[in-house]
Image (cartoon, rainbow, N blue to C red; front, side, top):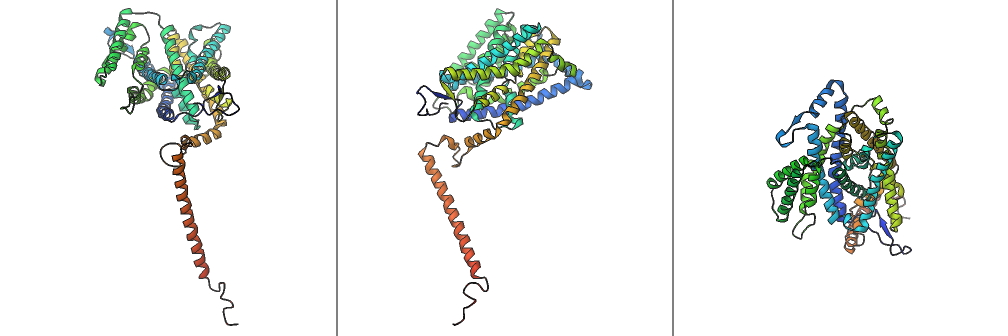
Length: 483
């Protein structure tokens, strides 16, 4: 991600948010393509939930379905549909998050401590500042501090859906920054859920889950293959983790982190990348939208929206997402550049970082989950906090849309430069500008074009002479008789 050091810079100076390497660019493009589709489905599911939960004619049906119980009670798994979505389906989401984190740590930007400093510090500040904003808001208003973690999470799928809707051509470096932020953000969210929202422990079930994870790891180490081995084992681990008192999604993260994400010489893809490629569509296209369908159905009315801005807990969530996230991520990025003697890429400005930071204020999936965990004993307040998450996410999306649209002409030029492939070899030209073979190919292409233009020009000139010769009374005919 570093760029050549200009002559007037010190040797320790480096660039941040510069051009990605080609493999990293290709990986990011593939990952974001799936997440964008999933984000659109997430938006559709959220809108469907709001309509379903607020139309009087079908409102009762939403509650009936969401609270319908199923599952073996003897195993402690007699759960509501909404509960299955939050604890079961989101385990798939966190499984993918675990693979993403492992890949970033061993093969992505996070493997280099210098490159990792930026997203880690930015994500950490992007969680601490919203928590601080929430705590100050409820402290002044006399509210409950239990929801301090609600505004700390970023929903990458929702953010990418916003980018798709507004049609901005965000450069790959900023998209990769957003994706890496979300990966680190997910890691901290996992730690928050595991540490702060575990109030009881069943040590027998926890020991069983740990044994299951050890077996899972040993099978991977031995190279055992077959979904019929791993899927049943994963279900057992998940059930034991759920009954242990630790949130069941932690099982998904743990299994994701165990997959090998480094590629061997005889492998086109590492096992982790292969599994992620298979499971990500299930996560983005089914698990997360279904969770949104049964979590986003909150009453929406003029009175409910007014309460969002008058109650300290809900106001804290909105301010945490809109103000805290933006200030935290932008401030963390600026501080990293300031104290590591790094400078922003020549192609970008700090206004671009601020716009992306505001986009990270969209906190939906994990924020809704943490809201359920934080205020699970108060149904009314849980619904109000969910409404606050939706409100804050919409405000952040609108703010980011305006900021990104202002700079979209510049982004489109950068995107076109990144995608241009004049020699048609499947590799963007910007990655081959120092390759002599590329310039030889381009010289041949230009020579063929020049030859074609010369041929066309010669044909036109010959045609023009022919037409002139056939015109009656043309030059040389008027006084052609003898003198």
